[in-house]
Image (cartoon, rainbow, N blue to C red; front, side):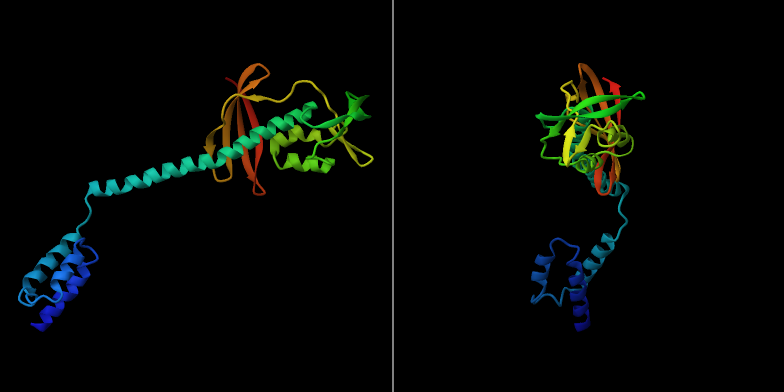
Length: 241
């Protein structure tokens, strides 16, 4: 009889991990004067319950368990898109800034201090006026180069590197001072919408935005890649809206 009582208590303890009402059952069993006389019926009841709990889940239960996983995956993708959106905005603004530099705008200068530099055009030489740079971002050509190389790479870097290198560079040094070929003609773009992430991967993403390009409605599609732990604009495709 003592052995049967011990067995009953052991099985009851195991049941506490799978039965919601374990606390109540333990309270009524431990210290009860009728525990010994009902040991056989209790053991039979517990054995039946444990066998039932090991049944294979039905197909509908399996499907129901998989739904939260799909929802989590969708939420993760949306989160990644949101994470890249500030980078897309920054790179679109960078392209605008660099394009203005190439056209002779977007840089603060002192128009009272200027000098002429000789430029080469179609095998001929012409003189162009450069103005002393008064922009806190740049003190020399190396800083201009670093600024652009931190934002652009590949195709776009090739397009805009003439801003800081070559005979006709937009920036030139003279006597330790930085000069810029300032021009008041129109340049840059007017973004008319919010960038949208349309493709994303671990080390790249693609974004698009609507643009008013000097009176023409267009769509800019930017490809960005990760280099040296920085997101850089690699290419820019332009299509009609």
